[in-house]
Image (cartoon, rainbow, N blue to C red; front, side):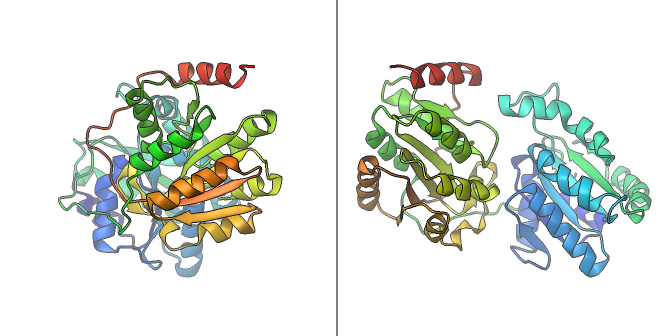
Length: 373
């Protein structure tokens, strides 16, 4: 279905979302139509943030907002849907557009499989009426269901369109780029050179895929790396949990800007606890690259100032490999919590592979490595 036709049927003029590859057509449409405009389109830090933005828009205008997201974000909207938007509380209407990763019967990555199984069930549990859009869905079918949805929305309830793979189409492609010169894969190669035998906890998406391939190229095993294939935004908390129990090991975090923004409160917790054996690296390309490249706000904020404000005693930003190597060496030798922001370009190899071991194998080998004497 043409995304323009769907948007015409919805008739909305405010969208908040977290990008999803399944919704690439919608994301490209919104960037083409609005760009980033707080009056019409905001890319938020997480899906709960989106729901709150939508609530604010409704309170100001009385009009129904639209929130878009991957189905992995359903967990983040449960609280605002149940305790803010509910018809039993403030009765705030909203249309959710949800990319259905891990749909039963459709091959997907392991972190999406169970989420795909419970996608519809979670909507039912939240009492959100839903309609699934596939490649075969027509404009008339969507228009008909939207008329039904308008009665539901008028009661202060929420509705959802669940989008199957390839269901939405948009002709124009949006190219995302920045002026940074370092590629993420080369950055991770430099990090691996300095970590030696130290454990690494890496964020979901292409960073973990690149780390896996770098180990393969170097002829090394993967036992030192915990590849966080899901749970976006929680990698630094996982690392803190490890570091607190293994004070004799230096724990390195490879984080992304979009992931760090999603649950930024974890930086405050990490900084307040100030483990002496953690290096927190955020590779900042200002983009949700793994799901298409739409921008984050990380290109407009001072992550070093945030880290220092959270209690990190050492925090720097680098934009060249020379500065990166100097920062990595200092962090390696520093007896205390360190933070490194690395300015990164947007893009990855077209032939970038995926881990050939399972998540369970990764966990077992990583745990065994952590517990070696």
